[in-house]
Length: 309
Image (cartoon, rainbow, N blue to C red; front, side, top):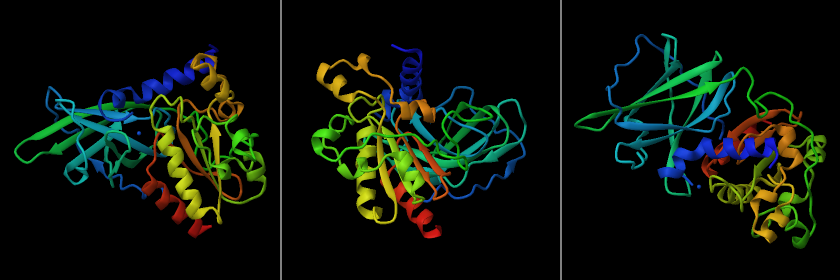
């Protein structure tokens, strides 16, 4: 197995390993943040009563979408309690803290869901997120840390989308050679990504591998993209890029170890899957979504984006 392929699989699995244990393994970009400083670091219980898991590992300077899975001490997911949560964050070695708001709970198609918000990272380093849940008779709390780099691995918002060739197909038989989707939607393989960017028409592109997804959310993500293509296909181009270059060989042999990463995935520097990007008419990244994004979240993002185009 090549070093790059090993890194891809390892990061993808580690990014979601907590969810595999109990939560996962399924707009407008979140509204501008209110990042009011908190004067003092909150006092948390010595023994955490919540497990907080950041979903995804690719964060860079600036505003970035954040997803948090929150579990109780017995391992059950804390679902749909955004109104009862207080989430503050800051550099792990700093004193200034901010309130993460607004926070929206998004239900996933596999087992549970996550809390989604936009964090504002103005320094690289390790950031700590402290979560306090008012559970009526008691207060539960927990923390998580994540690393913010000067530059994220995947293309960031505002940068030019890499102009790479993606595989196309005009028949179902041809599509089955280039995607691991059980029932390919030919509309998603009609245009190569580089040609789509040249056309100066809005693009929604998803990088996923339905049959080999380490998080079990690639299939649901591709289904979401198909539904949105039905709704917005006249206004934007929708493209699926399979993560693996030889999905047919992997399926026929039943051996995922023979997989070769798609050159498009390598060119985009994607460390995990799935990823979804909105690309403006000038070829720049308008929004990016690491890991699973619900249909409602993407619908809100696309509707707002196209209305402003």
